[in-house]
Amino acid sequence: MRTHSRPLKSSAGFTLIELMIAVAVVGILAAVAYPSYTNFIRKGKRATAQAALMELASKQQTYLLDRRLYSNNLATLGFAAPKEIENDYTFSATNADGPPPTFTVTATPSTALQANGEQTLTIDQSGAKTPAGTAGYWGK
Image 1 (cartoon, rainbow, N blue to C red):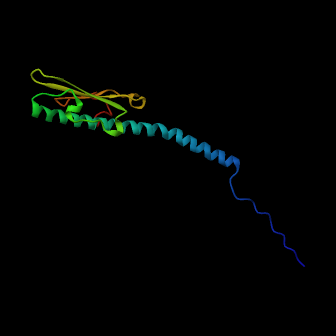
Image 2 (image 1 turned 90 degrees about the vertical axis):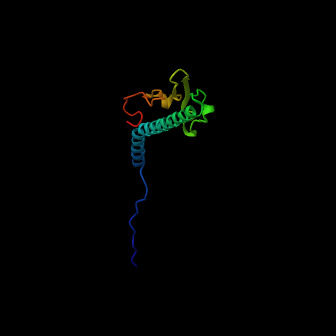
């Protein structure tokens, strides 16, 4: 009788070293990607704030046509901050009745993420936007 001996099979799986290398690679990728992700979120919220300011300026112009003056009360204008940025920016409006009437609407960053390198955004009755000429602001 002949007996066949089978060779030992190596067990399938990962060694501890291979797993540690994989975790280290994932950690490095996450460390590189996270700042880009937070920058993307910050820019998206800033764009939403800019759109809200444009809407607010439009509401001011409509209010002027109806009442021959601008309002400094956002509720009177029927404006509410967009839900996605209501905790990140504080909106305000100021007006002056003198000839000609004027207004300025402002979005001020109010969270640490938005305040990191952000400046207050404003637009007035003439359409002048600040911070003017700053790269990355108002679609530049």
